[in-house]
Length: 636
Image (cartoon, rainbow, N blue to C red; front, side):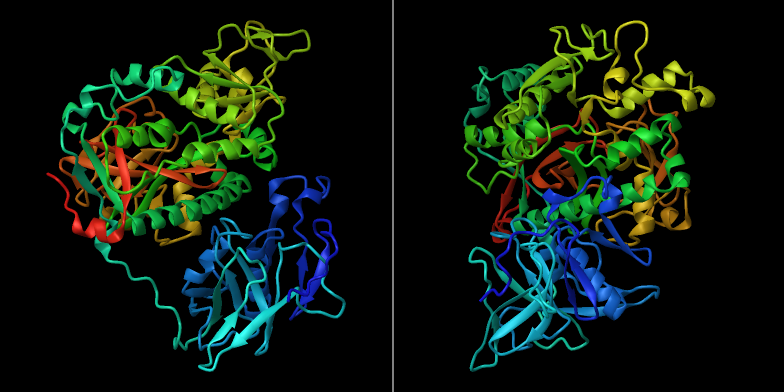
């Protein structure tokens, strides 16, 4: 039986109790957090001896802090608590060595012991995240543990644990723990030990499960008839841009689609969630180090605004897109497009309608939930007035804006679309109003922040002194411009200004420094190193977009491919060459989307070029059972 007290939640930061080793556990009732004591995002980050523990006062933070204070080691950063069950080592702080970590499934003959981690799976009470606690007492009929972020209640007097739940030892010496939440599942316990008897075997997947397959449907004339609903504004705009009812622009490819395995899809989801957390960690790190921030080539006059944007807990990111290489060589991320990411509609609507019309019988649609995930994220936002959707006048931005507008309005948010900035005006108080006189307070934009920065640089003629003194968002003679809207103090923008940092490719060398040899990252640096020479390397502008101004070199410094564009003035960084898989003449890139910081869907983009760009095609992606993928064969 759960023995936690039945009183209501204690205010955020309240001492709930002391776990063994006198490690305090605190309430994480965020609804009661005091903005005066916790004025910004960094205030919610927990450090001990300069070592990052996690967010105050979540379950993962408590588990890492308890291990560090009692054992001197910590487990690696995880995006979700349930992922701790997959970890296989801990890092001894201050020493260049690691110790083995073993996971034992609920029902194992290796019983839990005080100091081990008890891990819950995602789902039910712990939807998406799972949960972790520190075991304090183990008996044949019960197990006790200390934790944060469940109930937020002060522990009973004299207890060094938060809860006690039922346990059973079978006749064959299996130890089973009963979860007190009927809709949640306990995965088991995690121990630092050399003894691997009864431990869960590390996942060993057939490498072929990570290969992407190209398949083709029988041509029964499906492509000759319409299949997108022209009564829907977003679909009509999409058809106008594509000049027909099609997902790919190449006529010969209308019946082709790509497949990935369930195992690969699960790994992409895991990589997306974990990398989002790492990019956020690196963003905070950069914003606290002016030497690093200099490398991002952002006008110094914006630094304060970027920090304010990051520290403002209301101004959260809605969505972004990761670009991956996926093959039997592994999963590697090229970058994170946190600002003005494209392909949402292709993923969340068009590829699903393609599969229905072409009667694709294989697998499932990895974009089926994207629209609803975006709707739910908007519903959780702090928007309390009309959102002005600001877009340029091209057709791609039009259907992108309309697709997002639908998600916002389903979330109960009023919206207005503005094409360009014509018609905007100052009112007597210096606010900006649209052509109908509606004040602009909330904005979602298709423009990249770099466009606004280019306006500033042009106005200041790239003069460092002018850039340093520039006052963005101030009223001036003449009508408001894009930069005036996006950088006004009283206008809240999605994606927020701080997304300039994780979207800038200067973040990639920072990540490699913070998380060297991370399995999802590529070696990246500000200078060309011997290790990059050895693999071949890619030269990228730090603030480039759409695959522009990229040069690819092999290990002998031979130029394999280069693109031109408008970012030649940008500083550059260097990334390990890790080519996309080439299937039937196309280089194939997997993209995943986040919504509210977690995985929300996936798509595939292809190009004959080594560099995926804004003109690269989308093609349908399906997720199939592992056995189905191994039985199938790519066409071509």
